[in-house]
Length: 71
Image 1 (tube, rainbow, N blue to C red):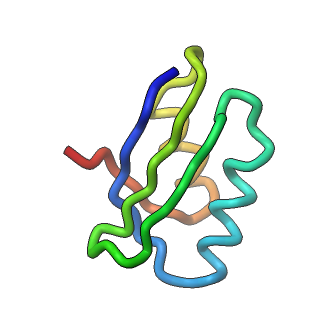
Image 2: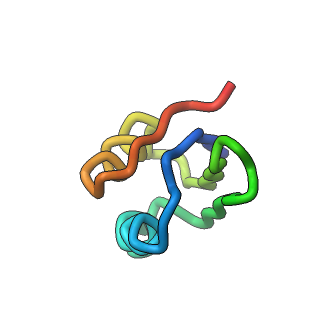
């Protein structure tokens, strides 16, 4: 398993809804959480091997959610 950590633009209930839609039904994504209290609106995603970080970013971008790797 891998852990991806992203900085996002999650700032509304609608974007959280879109996030849930993008991630919840994916079999390779095991767990995710978002910290809306953090200035970077940090999203943590635990995935099985077989999915790349860029694929997760693309899924979110398709839902109108900007994210980038948090270093």
